[in-house]
Image 1: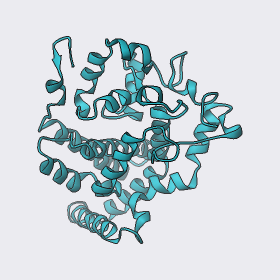
Image 2: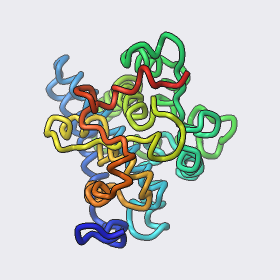
Image 3: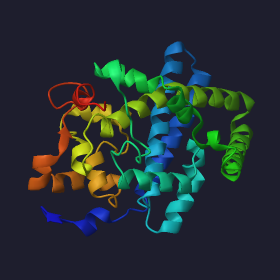
Image 4: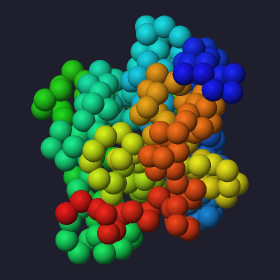
Amino acid sequence: MEQEGISLADLTGKCGWRPAVDIALDWILILLSVVAVQHFYTNFCFVLALLVIGNRQRALGNLLHEAAHGNLVPGRLRNDVLAYALLAPATYSSLAAYRRMHARHHGMVGDQHLDPDHINIGGTWRRHWTLAYFRVVFSIDRWSGSLLGDLRQWHQRPFTVFAILCWWAVVSLALFIICGSRYIELFAVLWWLSRATIFHAITSFREMCDHYGLPYGGIFSVTRDLSLDDRWVAGLAILIHPHNNGYHLTHHLLPNVPYYNLPRASTAIGVLPVYRAEAHRCSSYTRGNRAMIREWADTADA
């Protein structure tokens, strides 16, 4: 593929410093949010911290997704070491297990029986997009998955759970030595509340944006891309789809392209006739005829 002087080799090339900077910034925002609540506590500051932390938890999850594809940094070993050190245990995940599950998602995308990310909602919940969204948000199984991740699998993956708990023990000890016990307590409260509320709400909406309500029949028919031409949409995407995760169709078509190259990849394939004819390219989340939510009701799975 070569469009407008962009080659596939250019798009799949990996940058060693960009992911490190993004991971560092995500963690800095999380840690500073706790500091802000500790020193300037107000109800507004507390809620804002939950929003920032939940959003950055989603951002770290998206970077783990990149690591599962080997797209984080050059070299599979460096990629996996970085993921195990700063991403997977922080999101209560096993990189190996996530990689296996996500490979099934790519291979069976949209299949209601074989796709592990498939969302199936029927009945009266399909009458309006808000009802469909509430059905997903208030699913106990999905909520516990957002809150606990692979910790729910303690009886099936005891070593994974032990490794995650050990990682958190080391992190907690480091924060205790540097910041003190009060910071640790506040960090734990904000971290868990963020995962239980903001992170879960963003994750549920994001997952529905990517595939929900589209008919099974191939990558083009069951996957959406989000156009960021509008500044308001681009700003909202930082909250819902951090690290370019909204280019989801582009990612499924070119899974070896790192997240920082997805905008260029989307531009390159956007001129192809098959993409222009078949792609679900949405211009907003909720407004207009090309909104992502528009297909959540009438065309949702029966």
